[in-house]
Length: 107
Length: 119
Image (cartoon, rainbow over all chains, first blue to last red; front, side, top):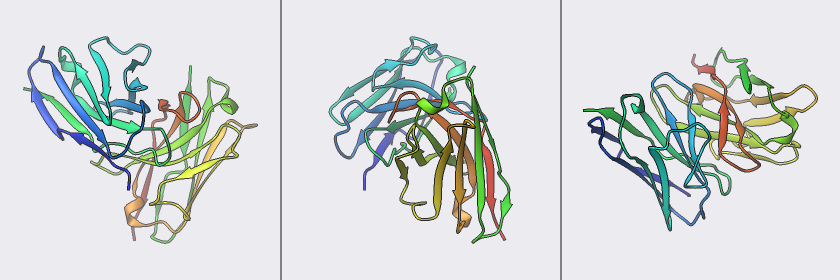
């Protein structure tokens, strides 16, 4: 079965730190990869699509990159409002699998 | 402004049925793929189903295939999810979501409809 393996499952960092979250696909998915942010008690929000394209209105401290089947979400300078769970998702073919999520907290 | 409003969530017994609806506004509904994503309490996101803009193509997660049926009424800007043979593990908040383009990520989400399957 196809899988999206996301790591770490949680992290704690200081305001201003650079934060990196990784997703690995179990097969090639080209760049059909999205990242979502879900703040506590809120609806998921699209951050990045096509692996590295920033959705309109998303702060530029968020960025995405890809290398083969490895995908990375980077927050260049962590802010208090970035406390959330982040999910990756493939959309090349059904099933549109989500990663398990990474919970980001402030140290 | 894009709005997605789910309805139909309820408490249902195992083996029962439920129909969720999603009323869409603020965009040309008939031009976009739509989908359902669920989230069990305290758990991650799980994709459930997608339907193409015309309704001619539907896709399901293995966990719901054969039990759930997605449909849309483009004349009424409404997305539906018929859920049959419900199981305790189907309990979740069900989000209606709009695809950014066909076969794409979801750029707008509803607030969700809560489905609880329990005896």
